[in-house]
Length: 393
Figure (cartoon, rainbow, N blue to C red):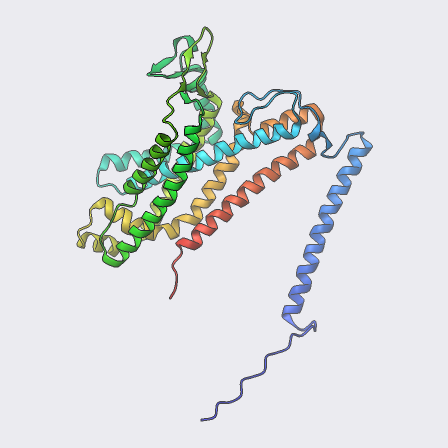
């Protein structure tokens, strides 16, 4: 049988009657209007600033900052530039955001899973936690934790001590290792252990899909990482020297330290955001059909195996998108740390504005920082969401 000839592809029409052409014109006009509006606002701002004798531009970033930063991962002195001060503020912001996301994910997941516990006390405590902390404004919680660490803890001379760890109004002080070559070998071995653990998890997943026999997806990979790290440490000479804190007359000296401001902002953000993450996890697990749970029970899986191997993997596809929103909220809420004196990028920008008067430039830098971190977090979570999505055959 002869098949009818296929219709020739339609040529693109540049006529106004073409809906596609009209849509393209409207989009170009919209972009042009937006660009024109931005240009007008920028030009008008610069003209008004020039008429009032206000300097503009980012040249101040190369000038000497002239102020100290109370807490920083990078060494900073008042003789360094504003640019370095903003970099230190950025590292402090990322420090809170990254640790906060990790701890929030762990705590929120445990609370969400706890809502399905067969123990009424556990279910009630998890629900009470969610209802309390998500209904109290985050700023009040930050102030509450800050007052707790600065007013209710003892002075440094009477610091609470557990071994070589001290807790007082000055913060949490703990021993830190003195960096030697052996620690470099341990870090290299730890990275190698992470790669081996990833390969072990991949192999265990393939074996489970082939045979249905569950294998350790956490403890064995964790043991591999720890064993490799210890092996690298031993090969590097097993350095044991550490810098231990000690009580001074006015403060706990030496060792590592976490300031009250850092602990307050981290704990406040984690406790607050975990309540929302718990509800996201609970909703995701509830979206899995009840038959999946019954099938897992019929296969003889324990309650923990059922949740880990059946329910959570399927709920993950529902959990990831709203979880991304909570990660973004945590990152942006970290800007409230300025209220308790934590030197994040917003705090550094406020100091720079007071000293230089470059309000527009400093605010633009802060906006760029949060825009970049939010887009990076969103891109990473979208990539992970694509990996977790159902693949059609």
